[in-house]
Image 1 (spheres, rainbow, N blue to C red):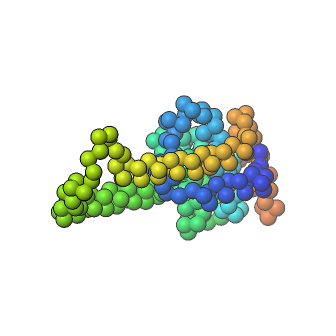
Image 2 (image 1 turned 90 degrees about the vertical axis):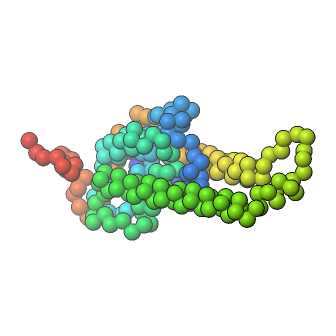
Image 3 (image 1 turned 30 degrees about the horizontal axis):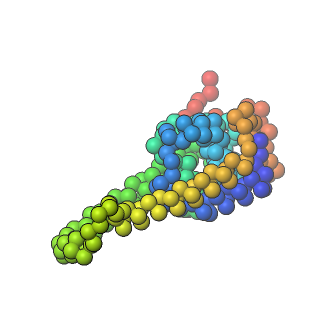
Length: 222
């Protein structure tokens, strides 16, 4: 199965809307599995990998079997990450200057994803450090006591400003991510079609005309 221009455009537009905050609040795979099912998760990741492979414009993109194998590996290893994370990781791989040297392999995909999660961990650590510094500044300057003095004593519990901000931020991120999921659903790829991906025809070489697919890295002939 080959992605049409319209289907590829839908995915690209979805990636354009994605950002770090949406990925941070997006539902993780282990929870998503119980709502949309593993088959739909696999479908989405396969579509992202196909788009990623096509976008690299290399002579030897991922084979259909490699796309399926890689997608299955990803959703089983990164159960506590989201589809939005994978989309951002692959987007970084396309625009982040990764060198593919004429081909895309499963090892390339995993390297791109691992690099993204390393960057994500560093960013979360920076956010946590900034929040702790801000809380300490407020306490050291006595601002917390001033807030208590000038805050009216309501008889009914009131939602704190920071809670309101956090709730609205989560709702916005959730709404944007649901739009992203809807765009992926437009691809309408059924589970039986996972292994039916057809590689893009590259006239400049006979790579896809081989009867026996090339060995993956690390495999040796009998």
